[in-house]
Length: 449
Image: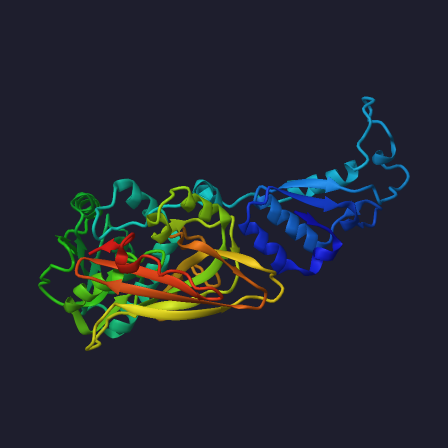
């Protein structure tokens, strides 16, 4: 890849290359400006671009003849270094590029933690069908920001449910469905302490291994008189009383892809008519992406199944070709008479006119959830909750990449389909060129009920 002064106005066109297998970028010496000391430097826009290249491990190659007359007294003027080795004529340019690299901010702790997951395809969890391992719970429990948001939501719900004058009299019944090893139980009790409200908690969990840890936690913290542990699938539990607040963390990378709607529909029967669900709603989002790395990784399997499977992935070598658009929304509690979790959505993405032609290798998926009122949680890029690592994006690949031209429209269709024992997604493109329907009838990828 070669860039020079003329590229300074084509940021979107340059950005698409981050989704391609670029190994080196050639910088011509005529791209450099001159600073106040007479040394070569780059414009702010070029500096930003180089930093992006560094972040993507792209090698920098200098090209061209020296075009700067260095001031008298500069070290670069001497033809030889002190040890007698002749200096390269482009040394001053190389030194400047090295200076830009050295002044980059170190990766935040979260980014360092996620380094090994960059562009690594993973199968989404199926916590309803499978029991999670202890290590998985442990990773999720370290996500402090997620539980801070849940605690904020429970605080607001408690304050709305119980006025100050009744705080010492009324006991709020709160049920944590899918309690895991107890982080939501802890967050809820901390919210009760913070607001001065009385709480009675039911912790419902189907994983027997997690239940053992949950019993130990309750005993250790002295919560025996406050927390009742229920070792049962929430869909089959016969609750002794109805809840004022129902708390769950059943969200997947695409919002509903870990079957939160099906679980909460089953649990809704033991929520009071005026009860509060946390989360109260969640919406999935998609956007078209160029990501040759992921496409080629899927292609290596040489079968149809892997092209019709959704993957959880920490996106890195990717070009996002258009802003996200909402796909499916679910609201809880759901008192609709026609209760169906099947969905269909047609979306049209307008590509930017200065992007240049690009290959769409698939769609990146995200979610945004409203926990309660103005407390939200999500990974949709424009509103993502900071410092949170429980969820990576989801990736829906295309069997054949679609080439889109600048300013053209990309039309895509998504279905959420429900059967007696499984839920699955289907997707296809109809414009500018039609694609087959991926994962028809859930033949390749599905989530078990």
